[in-house]
Length: 195
Image (tube, rainbow, N blue to C red):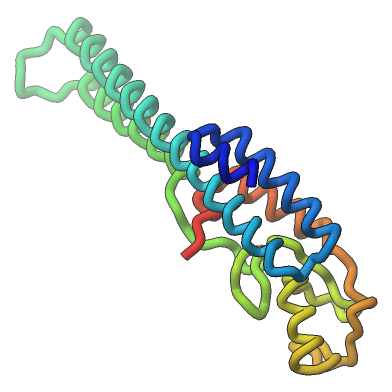
């Protein structure tokens, strides 16, 4: 509740910290409980809001810097240029190349803020959503913990992909995938957005 209250007060950083604490406590108490999922959804919304704010600020700063650099290049070219208008000489061609390279640099700098597809290896094979709490089976397949536990309880005690017998006690946290997901989310905050 504290995390949600902080978010309402627009204290996003503190709200995220409190929601993360609540998620960690919830996962320890009941990993497949409905509260864990609700907390994760609120945490994802908050992290998306943080990313969105930072992305807007970065975009504005990049655009301002790009315009300043382009103006500086044009001014440099104008001061260096002594050819009559309408003629392209070596300096003019060099100037155009510099402008194009500058645009490419700024386009590349803004790519991290452009939403795309989350890589398949970071997504659950059943839900196709990005992992929150990945676990690995003895056969080497990784699933979202709550989803595989639900499958084992409702459908049967077998791996949904390999069809091998599977018990809840055989599930092991997949820390490598969890770290990969976190690194991806840290770099691509847009991936927190829930549809």
